[in-house]
Image 1 (cartoon, rainbow, N blue to C red):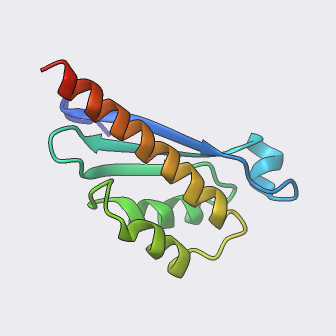
Image 2: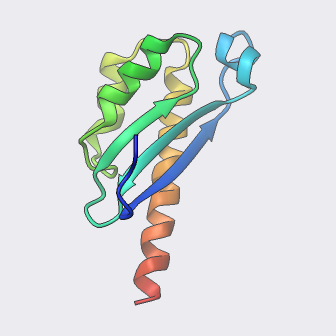
Length: 110
């Protein structure tokens, strides 16, 4: 897939539990989001997962939504029941923090 030049890529990470297969494979939980820089809308998303369906489901939870939509975390809590639920929330929060830093830096440079 090719992304428009007005998109940015942000990665968030978190630690998952020691017995989690994701931890055994990747050491941490990662989430990557492609965000339209003008609107803040998530264009695509992927996460470190041992099952492809997990990555697809996480993508469906996020794609098309504004990255700063406060209901994303509650949707994860209500719909994602994998052992890495907390890690997903923390990793998404880390990505959101980086997006907000990007927005504040670009606002200062204007």
